[in-house]
Image 1 (cartoon, rainbow, N blue to C red):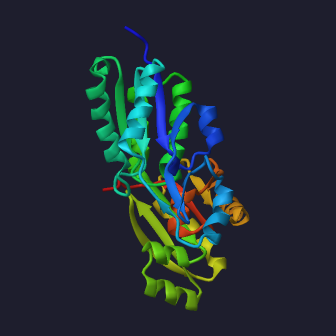
Image 2 (image 1 turned 90 degrees about the horizontal axis):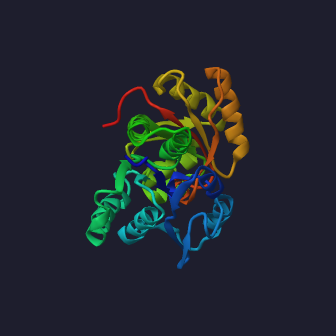
Image 3 (image 1 turned 60 degrees about the vertical axis):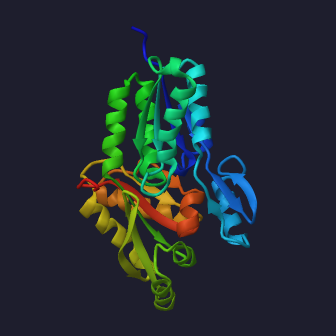
Amino acid sequence: MRKSKIKLMTDSVSDISKELAEQLGIKMLYIPITVDGKPMREELDFTKEEFYKIIEQAQEFPATAQITPFEICEAYAEAAAEGFSDVIHVTIGAGGSGTYANAQTACAMLYEEHPELKDSFRIHLVDGRNYTATYGYAVTEAAKMLKRGAGVAETVEYLEDWCTHAGLYFVPMTLKYVKRSGRVSAAAAFAGELLGLKPFCRIVNCKSSVLQKIRGEQHIIPKMIEVVQAEMQPHTPYVVMQGSNPELAKEFGTALTKALGYPPEGYWSIGAAICCNAGPNVVGFVIKRQEETV
């Protein structure tokens, strides 16, 4: 029996840097984004740090788009041509984007166009269930598992378990972006600006909610630590999220390390998708939650 040769694939909403993806052998599909009428590709045409300035200076609010079935099918065909027996494809959450459905369509397209691949090339789709490092972190860990010799079943099981339980939590420091995206109502955002309140947001399975409104920036880090301790599965890995204010993220990471007794797996810089909904100046975290998402 021929030994499996496995390709791991995801999209740039995972916020895995181009350099890390290349280092770990992850095939990246880059989302289109339009800025002031100009079509661009995240990570290819600008860095995350450059986008923090682009979104602040843009005349029109940038818009992201899905990766098409044709692009995905092309990536599958490329992997097959390179001799891979399996592709594990982890997409942005199906509840927040049509990319997962497009990947399903791409599978059907591939086998219709290349029926000879049905017995020799397998595609394993995993719904990332969320955005940014919530599934991006798991993809990087899966890549390390594959390098250590893990098989398809073990890797997919890890990805499904993590993505099912993971949650994204963040505090946007500027309210105009969440107001425009609808994450927080315009009236609530206006009141928050007047009263100095910051919404503490949670996204689980692509469903967003405001956990609480924090008055005073000095209370942000203590409130976030309280939620980590209450909702995280004990002794599991976690990631600190950062945007245009990495100093605040480092301060949070240091405080959280002291509270939990171990450091974060890393500091994850948000990309265009999160920026368009929360703004570039955010601080937050990704954890493996105690209860399953529904």
